[in-house]
Amino acid sequence: MSEKICSYCGKSEKPKRINSSYIVQEIEHVLHFERGILYTIRELLTRPGQNIRDFISENRSRLVKPILFIIVTSLIYTLINHFFHIEGGYVKIEDTKESTGMVINNWIQHHYGYANIIMGVFIAFWLKLFFRKYDYNFFEILIVLCFVMGMEMLLFSVFALIEGLTHLQLMPIAAVTVFIYFSWAIGQFFDKTKPVNYVKALVSYVLGMLTFSLSTVVLIVLIDFVVKR
Image 1 (tube, rainbow, N blue to C red):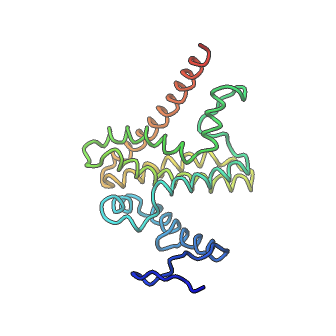
Image 2: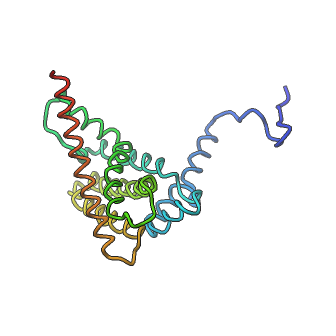
Image 3: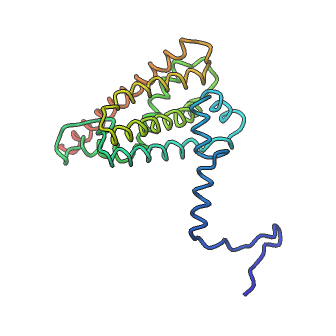
């Protein structure tokens, strides 16, 4: 039977069968250095502020989509973390496995991508407050955080991998590195010429993490209260 051809574009109406070549092409497309995740990582390591501003206001085809980026990078960290058993996650709660706290804690550990996005909402609130003079709305700041926090997951992944292979205690150094990168990237995004922006970025990050953790504790208390009634 002859292959059906589209009369408008001249291409086959039926997609090619999925095989090993298709899988390889898809992987190459994602990792392509000019428009894929490797290019995005390079640009976010060298000029995060400028590249994210360009993504928001000018060209959104040069970098990987931000939500996809943070989910993929969080998945990489999750796999390394669970393979080497590096650390327990954002919220560590010493309790029985049946407790509400352990259920939420386990969910966070197994869903770093979504947990990062939720945490980003809290951090974005503080960034919007501290940088209210700049013309960026709440959702644009969330996009900024998807890129920056995605890079944080990659930095954690590198340190976790080295710690897993060498058994050196590197995660405290990783935490400091991530704090520095966040302050630098966010400060660059808003205005790299103002030193106060780097301080405000760091304070926003700390407050965002604290309010995220506090909200988690409040959620646990409320669920336990409702269940026990």
